[in-house]
Image (tube, rainbow, N blue to C red; front, side, top):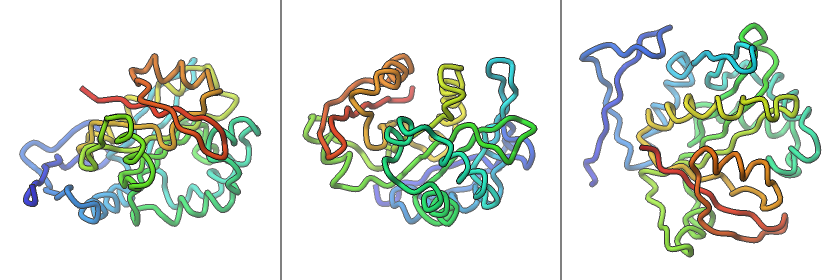
Length: 234
């Protein structure tokens, strides 16, 4: 296991779906620190993760968060309703959270994706938080108690957030295939909800169940009762 490595095809610049035949870059992924150069490379050339799709007649671009997205990210977070903010990251200050996300690009275990109208790069409509480190006192401890131990080399924590104006539009579902592409690129195949989902967030629970997630167990924090949900990619 200490020698485990994986091979990721080098993508053509500007052609995120086309790999260059016969060209591969090798990254060891057993230890998180070995993933950081790959995350930094994705930050430098986010075209590998860029996808374009249409939701409710509106063309969207889904791509990796960039260093110049700070103002748009602050605006997105500040524009969330009180309910969405509570379900998202609680009382986190939008400006502080946006700064932390931008400062963390290519430096930590995080990969963040954003979605926006194809012609409005300065206005974000959704974000996705992917975390490849598993704090032992969080999901690993809870899932072990459910009898479902998590393998850190396979597991990623997933937290999406869609602007209130786009709730129920299909945008959340459209985010999933590009997100799973990114997860597979980093050779993960088990997805767990980052921090679970609030038990009273019935809309989100229905969405996750429709998307193939299963409820693993419940836990309680100062914010109330939450449910852990997980999905194994085929």
